[in-house]
Image (cartoon, rainbow, N blue to C red; front, top):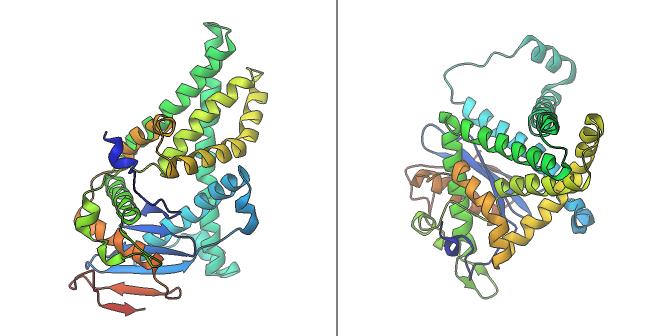
Length: 342
């Protein structure tokens, strides 16, 4: 792992971030968010929206991390479902809604059904994560008391078990064909952000996006210090340290305190990630190593078509056009694409 290529000395860090989705990428800037999806005929469908802001709340340390975490969870789920919805329009198999979906839509409308499905997915994801990565480790670690009553040692077992379960889960899903492609798009996202943050700066005008090409992106690594994967590793490591301070009370108190501490841990992890994203000193590099190692699982080398999707997502975020939907044709050079407004 060449850290000089990851923590690039002359880079201009931005607040731009993204997420790999089904056959595409979501890219979020300070004012605009873009969803770019490669459809089966080779064209790229793009949809831009205004980035949701939270005003002065995002100026408060720790609290802004909690807000960003919840927003990423909800908006990330919505974006993933949007990408799948776009691709379903080109699927030969017609989707048949369940009886419950038909009933719910008839009573409350299609928009309410969509919101319900998003929040239901978020709740299921939270329940799974809390059950597997919080409740299960603390229960299993309680068995360690038969070997030792040392509180620090038992908390260490719990924390390491939690990290091992998370890494094992990520490693297992990486073998799924769909997830392999998502991880390659994840790599494309990182390469493109690296390239964007290293574009030559024009005085008073910022970077020239014509220089953001496949060739420019290809030279950068798939690992990035300001990644959601690194954020999750910070969460697990900070949780381990915080839980040691709480001792080892009875099971129900452990569960309650761990759930109550989640917002604080998320907030601290967010601040650490922000620091890591704009600094390259040796302390940051050491703290970032676990997340970067995990990114070796959650990212993979993209092909040129994946990089094109990421590039168009960045360009869509940076242009000054109002939010819209449009298509970029495959048979034109993507630096000067023919665009159809939808």
